[in-house]
Image (cartoon, rainbow, N blue to C red):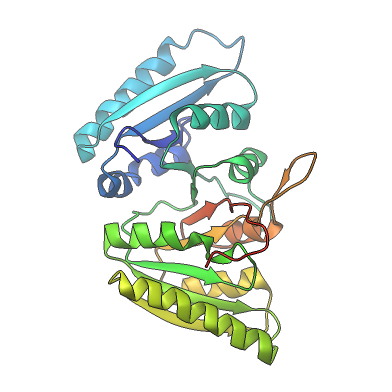
Length: 272
């Protein structure tokens, strides 16, 4: 992927969005790419001259604070998620970064805009729900028995090599069935071998006997993870794309940045 593929950050000038911009610097530097700020203007809204001035100021701030090149784009419309996805299809970003506003009831799911972007984006979507830097030193990669689970390995490997991060391979089994455990451990060994061959530091942990998303977020918090990488477990139907609510639970239940990857549709085989 060439350096022209930027990091795309939807911006409405809210505190979470501005935090996402500020804390995208480390990732942009590691990827050697620019930042694209995207602002969606409702149709019929007043002149966007003030918005242009704010965006230009933010572009200059990014350059001054980080040395990272940035630009902005304003698109008119009311369907924010659809417009984000449309722009993403055009520019093929390396990542879409979304700053989440999770004030209020901690049991509420993330907003519908974020849900739609995560479920339909071909680009990895990084959700940040706390004001924190993104210097990734420990990446938690959950592995289960699903066909798509290990598809996250290439992206995890890429980020780990860029940032010299350690990968925590988390083997997750809801029910500790001996045969399933044996199969999962085999999968984990395959992942560990591939990481080790690429000289990426890694450790393996096994968790079982609880709700899937809770086991993952509890472990990630326990080991002090800087990044949690998950699959959306999406599946195509003749009507629309559905997303496993587990992904939403994970994003909702932790303050650790969560990178969501949409799985490839592979018939009759696992990733390797």
